[in-house]
Image (tube, rainbow, N blue to C red; front, side, top):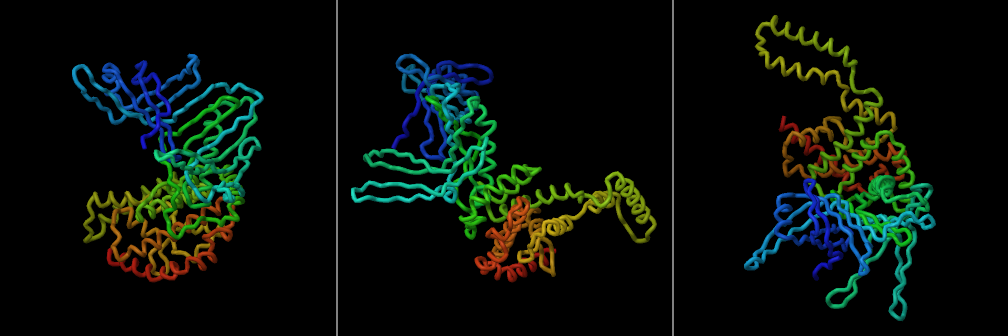
Length: 488
């Protein structure tokens, strides 16, 4: 079925500070939540000559009704051009066209946000996450009619003591065969009565908060969730905003064993608690990055997943070591003098010792490693972190070599240097990756002040529901340790 055109109008395209007027443009809005808007431009020869040399521009247009009154404004600060084409239909008849991918597209109808007595209703459009939607009960009557009831909506105190409520809305479409299709999509709704609230404030004040809320919701459900746009209405004014420069998550879990970090009964409390803790966390960028590594937005290979998880853990430990002054054994200024003395003495030893043939380049390479002696090891930082937060990880694959078994850090070093994992160690890498994920999850919920015992990475929970994987861990550890011993 051909996509329906939502708008066909003349607009202004600006490229390199040059305005091209009266550019005919068709605009197609998303039908499904994960779709993106796109444009089709129909150009004159002069317009084509200018735009075919550019790869992006700005678009703005006004739509007028039959009375000649403007009833809609359309703005796209950036449009990426693609599929530029020209087709010759005969003498002096050439068709010029290209498509555009608008970024941060805004469509404003009957703009008047100055109405003081109207409540602003904002609906944030979210990527799929079945764990966040309300409980939906459908009842079919004898006459064939269907009654839908929704309950158990997740909600959070959000802006000015207003609640952000998660819900599901519906869209319908009639097929060529006159059949009626209906589908649902996840949304978050808020009502604001502030008469001074403006369009700009939705992006500046609310959108980043929605992103942070969805970050925590994604952590709780193990499904990356994103806001892909929003719709706002106040009185007769309505605005649609479609975010650009984003890859929308599909709502699928990558890990087969992962059913979510917390149970459904604790989901509301977990999100409320951890969202508030996240807002008060000093270094949000570090914690945000760690959660992103834990809950990816797209599929990853096993090796990539392992390295990403370890990087997330390292970010948190680096932040911890800086806060606890655990970066250096000796203050850098004092160490500088000590290092010079070590270099001087080492050079002296090399000259005075018989049989030692150490070149200046070899000495230089050794000097380049001296600073590592002054840096407190990651292992020491990790042990201090576990002691400070009383974090229990003895049931999991150790992070560092222990009792002759290689640690997760050794596997990370192996992978980061480009060494391939043999096929017979693939099972070991899978179990190691799962253990690393559990460690990172325990660290994050601990930093957010939530009890590990109330999560599905609690030692007792894993013992009951992941016993098969944990029972295989000892054999796989021995297998991968043999691989390391051969590789030395």
